[in-house]
Amino acid sequence: METSRTHNQDFRRAIEERNKAQIDEYVTDMVPRLTEYLVITFGANLNVARECVQQAFVAVLERIAARAMADDTNITAYLMIVSRNEYFAYLKNEHRSGSAVFQEMFYTEPAEQLQALMDEDRQRILELCLQTLDGRSRELIAYMFKRPEASLLKVSKVFGISPVNVRTRKSRIINKLADCYQKKSNE
Image (cartoon, rainbow, N blue to C red; front, side):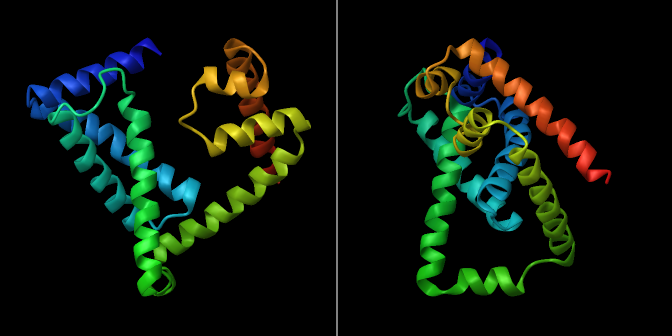
């Protein structure tokens, strides 16, 4: 947690001091993560996800430069939210004109089509593995998948357990899912 806070403070300071090298390092680290978040969580087209993440970075950089963001704001979580909102705005605008469906149907690269099939297979295996969990564990991990920006404290309040217990349960659930996935993917 402290490392994340320091990372966010370093990024904020780099923007304020116009330190291009540090800004580039943070952007290079975060763009693939945020792009993957949109692709995996919302099924975004890879190119659309990249564009939305780029727009999110522009908006956040402008807010930080204008000092319009609270000092204690978690920049990473904020970028996730802004990226998600950019994607939703894109969908809203594209579906008004009807071009989003057309683009998804006819402009998917062959490599992306193969990747989508592999992702569908992974998703199917993951769903099978989720069914092997007890109800409470399935509920907890589903909540965390849907709300990756939620803090341990928020999750602990929702489920009525301590933040340490949330972290422990999450770790155990992910280990169970990883083991199950490995077994089922080798079948």
